[in-house]
Length: 226
Image 1 (spheres, helix red, strand yellow):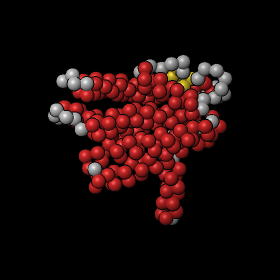
Image 2: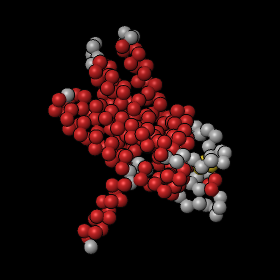
Image 3: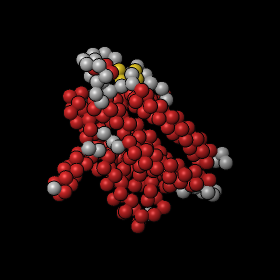
Image 4: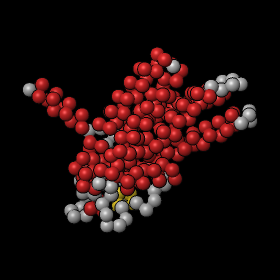
């Protein structure tokens, strides 16, 4: 009995969040390899490998993320909420700290560390908001409808027009929220989704502030403004 339960659990885990876990595996492999070869760059390279792998897999699968597919498989494409913050935010924080240490640690900053750290921050921005987009898709299609026959409030978001939202629609919502720290023409229609949007936009504000500060610091340091 316990063996059958473990087998069922393993199958569920292999399908749900699989893009996220596959990217984690690539990032971990990159870390194990680089910690022996270039330990100073290990975290940044591993983070970039994780972000690039995840973004690449999502980009490859994006044409398949139709409303019909998401309605059946949104759970499989979702990224775990804890993983979104723990992995993406953790790697970005480490890389931001490494970037500022590299820029302010002496007269000659380590260009390699600067490039890797800047790349990690930028890739982390796209990866984080992509993960959030797929989580919005999961919440939208998995949540029960609040009113029978009323699909506009199915998962807490109301999209303009007659088309059901596909993967691009959720990326659009997440990227606009991440870049502008505001919603666009898509309405938030449930309190549970509003809580997620508040958390997302708050983090996006601080993330964008860090990117702006890092950009100014890089320009001043490499431009000889110190």
